[in-house]
Image (cartoon, rainbow, N blue to C red; front, side, top):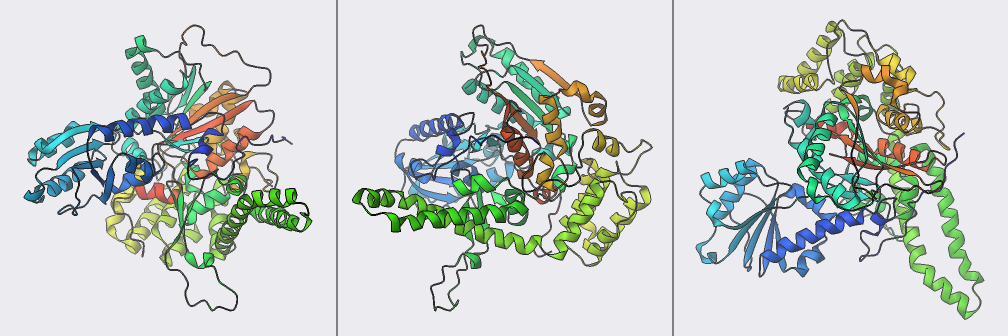
Length: 618
């Protein structure tokens, strides 16, 4: 059995000033990236002299919150903030109006409407526009057509590609990346990825080795190498922090995101959705009831909690299989309880003083424990339900190759009961992926049932899923999935959920294919699985980047290598947990930092491919 070394992410509670302290606890100090982004933001704000109001493209407020709090904006004379919407801008007695927007044509029309509706009384106001992450000629052309381009004093771009989410996690939060690459043949997100990786190399040194698997991975690597040649003269003299970059296409492993994640963080995301490091939860469980009081004044606003490794307890339990969380919470409760009991033993002034100095940390720990106990109870209500168990059973049957070639009775029943469409699509796509496509009559049956039950407008969605390779008719070629499953040991009977010895614990038996490929690359190397790699879509390759002389790392005895794994098209929290597990294995000699175009789960992923996403009531 593999032994784990203690995680390097032992984190203290972050104070307000240390909002980003947890970003610097990992192997790679990601705070450097955050600080670079903050510096550019300050410089732009200072270009617009005088008082300011920011008009936000709503999608950007979450990612920006991870880079800069309101206090930073306030220091640079930002007095008001509004959400971008049609009509007249709300009144604000400011000199500058700055639009922070993604380069989207529909947003240009709203900006044009805002400006043309402006009251002539405010003619002295200056307008500025900041495109995130890149300026767009098309958008500027649209503003020109609408007759408002000349109203802008500054038109600029704010290059926010990779946003640090945690000490070992970066995301571009580019929600349409997978759809653009696989449905629309649009490589914009790949260009942004390459640019983001160049920014990373400017801050952390050239990455000497690049490996990749998949068409998009090949394109990103080519773009990076071309950009490097273009900037050949301006190479920075930074000792490389990363030893290896691994680029992985999401479509190399379509199965993993479809499966229900079974880690604590994965289940929070599956059930409630984690957005930019925050989750909104039903408030009832968090009501502070005083003794003797009824529950008449229960809160109605969702409870919003921030989730990252700055919170000691969360860092400890987030990557555990949910079945191991209860024991971890009760152990923590005993430790906290014992710490509070210490006050009875404090006799001298010195001892009392020491106890009092520890009190804030202990109270924070107790409040954190109360929150996570409530979240675990909410999740347990769902995971112990019959519906959850039935769904999981069918998923695991598909993964192990049981009855994947005929119509599944559970899916039939779910359609008959008009269960949420996304649940049906996840299961049907999973069956298709595990069977290398569905027989024509099985595929036609599912399609007919779905369209008759949920509406014919969903034919567009079914076509999209087919184009993306998630739902496809069987062709003459044989089903390679069983071979891939056996060779890469993707299914492990009796996965140890409490004290894991393999990555399969994150799905209670299934080892994510993407992470197995990462693990094998580190040891013994991809040459050992050439045949399987050929069965998976897209090329696999290796590139080396020349380092300026004198920058070759002299590795200390026992020092770990660092690999940046970049998922093109999205990554799930369960995959992240599996990579963190591999980082902690004592003799692996490898630590991982994770980057992605978007943090996804099966639901958000399928939704991004739907042409008319179902309404929440469906």
